[in-house]
Length: 168
Length: 358
Image (tube, rainbow over all chains, first blue to last red; front, top):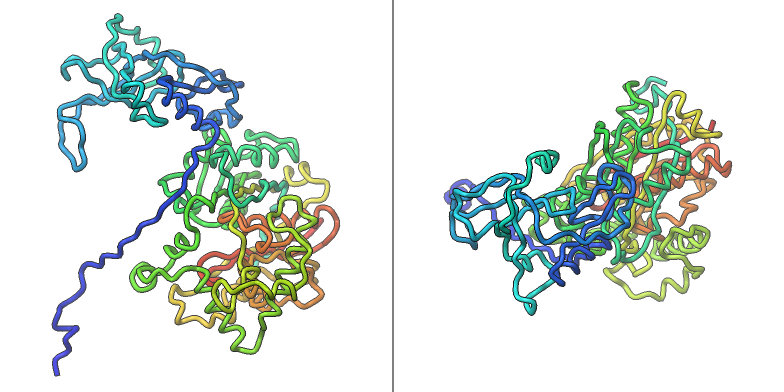
């Protein structure tokens, strides 16, 4: 009698679906950042040792290992330190290509973070460009980065390279 | 002192700290929970992060449900100027082992070891299923409580233990934990009363299960002059080993722990009198299996801290065993102690550390 399990050939793939649900809380410092977003503001924290301001802060200075206890309200504008133009489509993409993804150093911060740059042709983006955050309507603000629609040029002259060269 | 597992270069547990162990730390993230522990472990001996030359941590991304959480946790230390750093996806006891091995090489004299985890963020019973063999066992989602109940049943069937024995272990742990301000489950409750608990999964009643705990711990290891400088009574690691058994639960005799017995043999547990043992037996019935495998008789004080039945922070409960045992030697309550850590389902992997006072 033929062995039916052998006749089916070797098993080459095995699907084992896994799903885990988490009830996550972000902690003291990140909560302040998220609550700030809910009010249309960027909140950072300053290191008492090196004076650097982190946004978002996780509650410590990664250089000095001490708690960042002073809350700092940052500006709505910042400087593009570096960028890339996305031309490649990928699964789950929600923005029409091409678009600009940039690191923005907010005024008053010592850590840049990633933002979308819009309202400018992609071939005009450059390092040092001054940009400002465009928020969702006040009624749509949530404690999430989704509250920031994107950044756009704020009309100021480009920042001097010396002012952001430490953040590349 | 050159046999495998025996210390070639003396290394001391120079300092130990642990967080308050709680059911759920809603307020602080992992970094915020770790920072006070790191500050305390340095502060205990008046050093700073600049005094350690190597850092090794133990944690798992499965607890937070996000990748590379151990990298972010380094923010709690402040690794500038840069230094050598490593991580194990295991309990901090194994991170300590890695640091100890590096210290054996003699190029560095001090290391920081830490571990952390919020067990409360997900469903721990389900998360621990994912440590099983991913092809034949994990897809069936056998949860860790049910697997441990199978082990407890096998132990009862072998005639080695009864449910009353499990309750006695749980009762003693809760009572001893009353003297441990960092413990989570602390109460004076008789075994007979505990036996009135309902079964969670028979034959395990509620008291035979570990609590779900959020917490963190840290140790500073020192060798050479630093070991003598940082402690009036250095606590030396005199034997250290860890062993693992097969993935396949069906291929194991769950009523024994050959990996523990082997590690104990290599670490030299039997080469002197053992005053106390801190045993990482998350489920009450496992203490008896481990006590037998470690070759400990009834004269040995077991888990004076309350043990993992009083606080079981995932990824730290093993490291805490080493720290608790070391502190009791430092304070003069013991001269020679055994610390044990476990990992995996039903005591799959075991680590044994022998500690001795100066």
